[in-house]
Image (cartoon, rainbow, N blue to C red; front, side, top):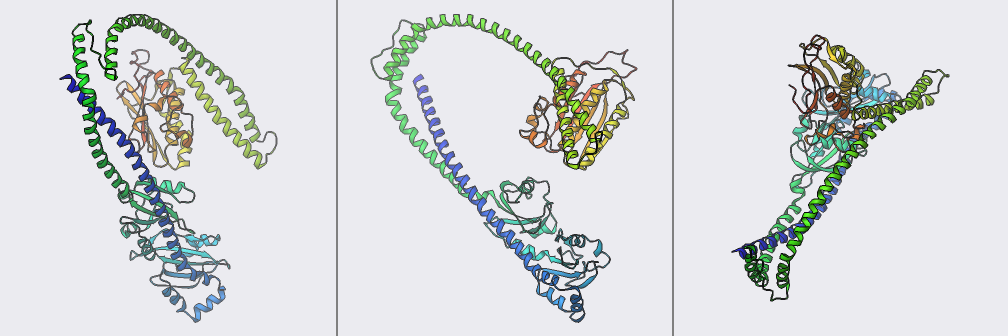
Length: 628
């Protein structure tokens, strides 16, 4: 029966409202517990990382304290000491567990005294003058090497100190001793600790296999976050190089570029919050069932039965008996509903008349909207024309500023001091950057105003790309990138088109590739596909996430929020590039998996001087067409 359906609907609504309220309260409690637990574990791990760093630092200090005393002895006395007590240096090394080999050299690299527990590595008179540790101590700097292996595959690190007479003390530290210190750092059931250098090399780990294999975590998010912190003290949650979800902290080892990292699995770190969510879930379910059952009984007595009688009267009205009046004997809410139902029929006709009037008003509103859109389009055209004119007017004085600054830098008005030259150079760089922004705005304004004129003339695509390669090769050299130009052998020697605008497209795409690529390569190549030819720019940069691949072609947009602050730029380059390509009858698309680089493919009509006049041009390609 209908009243049963209404009853079930109200009970369902009650269940939903109750559960939503309980879930909201439970979620708040869970978030509070999780945040508190995370802060507590981060504090404990930060303390463990600091303690670990202090223990490793103390081990190094303990191993090297005895060496520093040897540096306070005069060189002549050291020679006498080596002559009359040849076993003394060996005894010193035997008493120092952390030292494998020790030697003292003079300012010329000549060995004054040396000894060791195995075959000598440092005591080579031919290699000492060219060794990194000797060159560093000659400059008055302390030296600490990466972890290296002996022929027996035993790990060691070289440490060296300058002495007052220009010579140096050098020693090989036993990294097995450091590994034991790292392995002794214990916290929690799943806690682990390891030591890395600034290049990401693991030089000590609770699991020594990682250190023996010389595991490297360079490029991982946690290492980048640690290195971005000036104090090397960082805490956060992440997936570590072993594929585990962990919370970790770091601390620097003073006097070295080594960093201690402690990690704990999230499962252990958030045990309390997981128990809390289970407890809250069971409690919410039981409480919801109890509230629903009790409330359903009350609703049946006070609401559902009176509503059933009200519904029977409504059925007669639904069958067309508009003269029927619903009984309204009660003065409570149900009675008020009955009175309202009786008034509803009277108001229906009035509502119909209002709807007729509203439809007439809507037609007038639609006409007004069309008129407003026309005015908006006119205003947009005026804006584009205004920006084009203003950008053009700004270029004239800016070019004059650049010219005068370059004349001053050339010394036309006399020699400049270093400070004056530095300031003028900064003015010149800033002016050129501002001119580039103005040129972008001018191009965008011309495109929006429909004032871009293309020149259709023969040009050599190979010569154009080779010229661009020479022009931008310095950017690749500066960032140590592999920059290549590759040509399709089927590409004609000459094509018809606007070479200047095509160069602008390629330079914009290459500028983006160099800007967002820190290592790897940037490649620009050509392809021939039926009646089209393609320009392809590939890089190994940061990539473009899928959800922003369409918006990057919009003005003033970049791949991620905050990218403009990190990499610079106005966000106009790709917008101008796309509009120029469309104007030339082509299209552009981008392929990227969001992390391993990007590939931009520009497709243009294949027009040669031979078929330019005879054959009809292909239809303009829409943005997003494959063009292959």
